[in-house]
Image 1 (tube, rainbow, N blue to C red):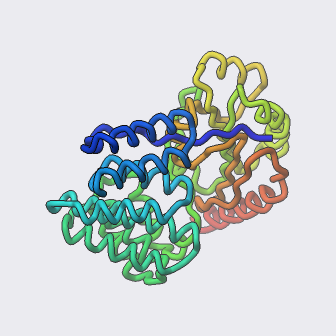
Image 2: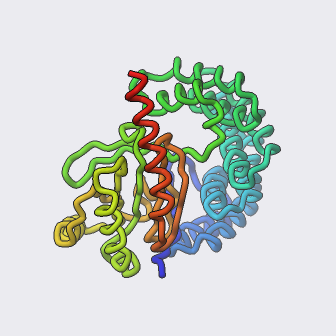
Image 3: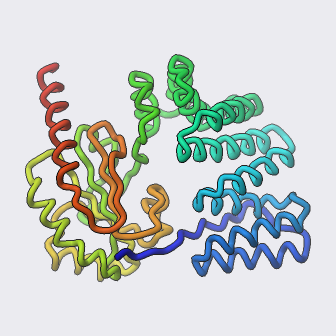
Length: 335
């Protein structure tokens, strides 16, 4: 069993809604559907609103992109992003619109494991940078697209360019420099960069945990299947104690006191962080719609394994931990 919800995208306030009266009704209906966690119905409402508004409703288009990408409806997301490109006026809006379309195509390429979307992605990021040359995320994203097209030297140049555009303490700068030295890793499924403050006040980031295996466990006290899976997580923590494994339990609880009481009562002595809901930053970063939901990240920061529900993961953890120890030994010998 699992606990399931559809994540409702954050409703941005920067764009006005549709001008057409019928479109306004459809748009607000879409927002209502999001509040009820009915993503498919919301997507159809936003598409209808955009059509009723003559294809010029930027607020509708942004919702279509967010909800469509979340549902894997790349055709809807791409159509909306293309409309944004066609309607954009001025350098900055054009750059942002091309970047938005490039991002949609990147998601499609990653999910479908096809080169064609990345060729178009590179074209869109190139157009974004032509309109706004000082656009760091477009530079970084273009590096990713080029790497997926096996154009490693061009990709490395873009990552180096990005590193020169952002502050030294920028978290993505370190990843960009890692890709400069290991462009092939760009084609791996790298885990999202995260930064959290745990229940005991520790600042924990993925970069800080480099060289260790990281097991991220999304759960909540109100989730029955999560409570049933807890003894298994306790066994894993005990079995691999003293090894290069870091467990981070991410709670979707809104009630802080209930969460703290639960982890104390149940001896959850590993790292604990409260995200608050399916709309929390970590849940959105990892696209979590169901719990319990675990992710295993290897010593290089590559997302190796993902499971919804309780699962036997000890065997795979053993392999990842063995490699982490080998890397630690190699680094020690090189010093």
